[in-house]
Length: 494
Image 1: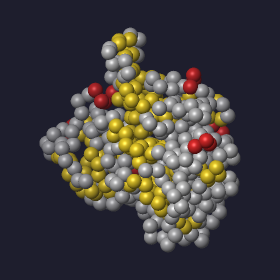
Image 2: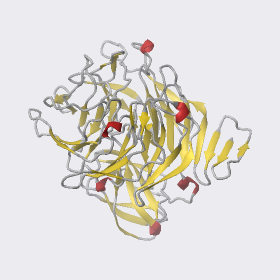
Image 3: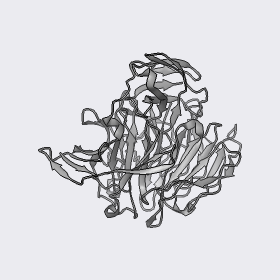
Image 4: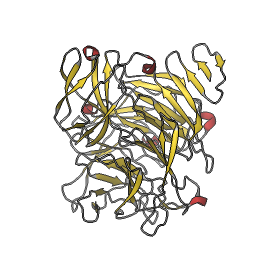
């Protein structure tokens, strides 16, 4: 293993030349000794703890209409298993390259849209779910029209919203629609609405409204806005513009997060680009305000686009990947950064070893580490190395969850057994990520207030608001008074 200490710049080599690690005094990057078998353009953490990768044709038009692999990565064992390719009713391959995705309440991953053709791109109307237990694709009724570069969002009702993307004719799909197993045709569409950009970063708010942050994939920025879904599909979606965003034209391949905890209803937009140039702009909007307005925040230390933002269980925001210039790996070897909402400050941490730009991903693992993968600076140039980041808390003494319920109901009081009960500061539920193109509509950290405690247990209450914590599977973490988190246990809210 080769280690780089960020304070001494010394290098120490051992026999394990296939593993590379880079560290500060406490945090660490590690390049794994094996590669991903496919380009992981789409990545999701399943409730089994495995990471699901798929890419369809993978930005290679020569692979259109071929069989498309998807793989399950068992991170702990370092193994991959391939899944049977998704096929339509005529046994033709379904190209899920550039689809959208979010989790259904039972833990199945809804994947909607994909690539019908290249150059110009047309969108597929296909909808499938991936079952984490059977580890198989399941066909669902198709959408009303195609979507290439859409966003998919699970609502508090458990229904699934699909917006934006290019349709089967390569035109903007301006007709949002909702999936429910109770609908006769699977999907019901709203009337035509104003256009949202490709892969719009959308967030479910506590009142059931939808917020578009101003971040997207490609093109110039569309004004951030709040969307209010009507009670019937014959009514139009109402819109309210959110002003104040600095450099709104720099939303291309920006990152956005619902800052922890979700109850605070603050969304942060981070970096992004316009044409070939990146920005280090960071803005935050308080969506509890009567008239929400973006305000400036502490900026990134490094301008970047194509980057990923991950909520950590210590309630900070980790940013990695990306480049100062569009799809330029020579400009992408940037130190990762961590944002602390309490101090409103960014800290540069260890620098990753593998440059990652377009079509790269990062996601939180149940043990608190962050897995990074992918990168596709040009067609048929695929970055398959895998790298894992261990935050500083991984080297500290960590609290332990001895037991907790595997199922929760809204508003329920429940007990967590832990020998560190006296020193626990936070209990958090984190929704697993399902990410692509710097966009993730899934991740959120929900605070679980502590009611009282004794020496070995915590009594806590889960939120009664389904929009704060949409039904589904979550990672349950406890964090001590230093912010050091436990390893997660899995629980389902419904």
